[in-house]
Length: 96
Image 1 (cartoon, rainbow, N blue to C red):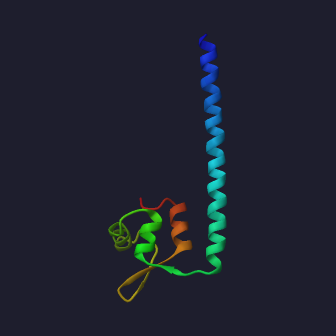
Image 2: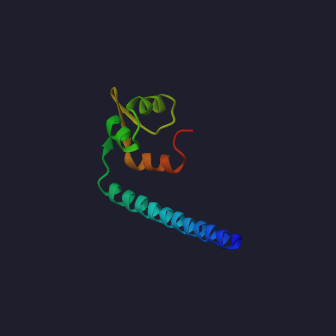
């Protein structure tokens, strides 16, 4: 009976690997399409937009900017961000 259990586990692991591959492909396609549509009408994001997009507190965004970890443009006292730069930053690993 043990070989049957091992086979079931093996089948499940193979299915999980297929699912993960499919999710990776979907995410890659999503990011690619998202970047294409955003680059057509590129607008600048503010700290609130980026913190909402990344689902983190705005203080983390300010800290990452002050450490030079996050690409930004400073206009007066305001931090502005290009969505394309944020997406590239995420693809490269984000905050280390």
